Image (cartoon, rainbow, N blue to C red; front, side, top):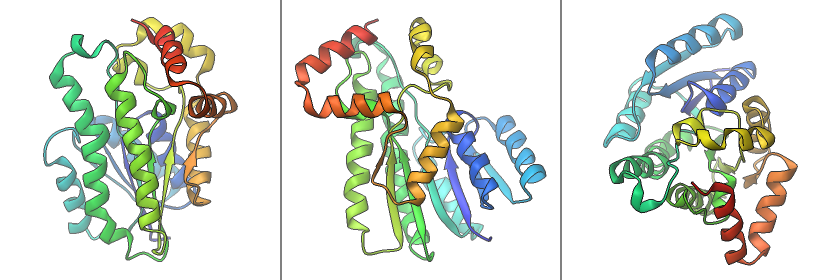
Length: 258
């Protein structure tokens, strides 16, 4: 197989699990995240254990121009990218007015702008392939407003809406677009978001990254529009669609109140 998959946020969590599983399917990998040592270690592991190519570029996609630089690296190296996994993202926990504004802007740049820009820049490459896939990673937070995670949940609602619209625009092309909406997962997300105080609660509901990645990739290859791993997460998303919004907001506020 000479196909390549580009994975953002590949150094840990769901991104790392996706990388290992795609390598197991014979995909050559393009790995990107902020941490070069972790990317280098992962690339070496993949080359040794799976006998595929694994290249990496350490970059902070929350910075202006980073997505263009990453896509330029792909194009200049003429990697035939047929799978794009937009996984990189983070959250910030707390009341909107009490959180650092620049940190919240950085979050929006990564969760929204980088995903949009990278998708835009790589679509011409993806459309050249016989079959291509985009998997955008959102969250079950996309289905309702979440007090104390206001901008994070809003950013994931954007990702879900954008993915569904783009999917329809590309329906007559070789590119399929899916959106993965995991619930609590045993990654570094909670620590990065400053949610260590809720660690005990999270462990009761956490799924493992390998399980989420497996379900996400299966749904992507089956060309599903939305992929929600886990029964409780599906139930939560269904409830958010049908229950009174004010009720849902009160429930989430009580769960995530800082």
